[in-house]
Image 1 (tube, rainbow, N blue to C red):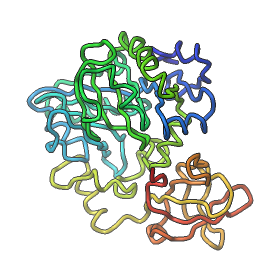
Image 2 (cartoon, rainbow, N blue to C red; image 1 turned 30 degrees about the vertical axis):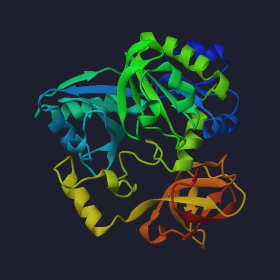
Image 3 (cartoon, rainbow, N blue to C red; image 1 turned 45 degrees about the horizontal axis):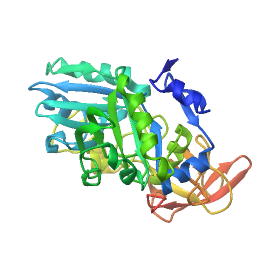
Length: 361
């Protein structure tokens, strides 16, 4: 089990620690609902240092990224980031990721912790045609997500740049909490604003301490992975391993908006055909019409109780006070307003297909 540079700090704070993607991670401190509310109303801090970071450099860096990712990275300018995915050769997704353009001919790819080795091997396989320089920085870098409506105000004293000027999916390389160069980005996964700090492992404790000092008047608290999951689900953001995986296509998953057929990428021809014909199944968002908590793996059934899909993510929404979830159903049942049922133990609980996000802020 690997530790992040802050694992001991979390234990000292009384966090409940769990194994996650090979790392010892804090799942909660004071309870998911309280932590969820902290992020929605004030400011909370997540240690997400388990995420992977690859630096791709050189004259062919962009060509390699264009080949392995679905989105069009040629649109990126320095200081901008882009959500994308790595399609596999059989119609599924190797991983979803964020691509940052750091300099001309230099990009940072941020990938999911559980997929670091798989992604590295996948990208390396295609790099034999491009010979870009690839560096895996995952073990050397830490990542904090400082999220919530008060994040900018609470953290402004720690940097010389104007945090409120960093737009969504933009970033700056700047000073922060006494460290000269860190990446400050606004690519949040919670839907409540804020930003992320990428720094070296040796710098993270100083940054953590100063962040909590600066945020003490703003109700700042450490937040675990359980609340991160309820927050992202209220926004309808996909979680790799739940809502997308090696067997789900970006078209089925509603990720057509990050799948650009203006270029050639891995399996683009087959995905273009799928887009034209329409997928047989689609990822939908649903709210329960009655009390109940949908969970990953529960069956989605029709009016006669026949299975037609499965819940991929589900929870009791702390903000909405009702059961919400994502899952795949045949396309014919994917229209907004469609009625479905979630099999919760012996009960088929009625639910309605809704438009994302669940949480409107």
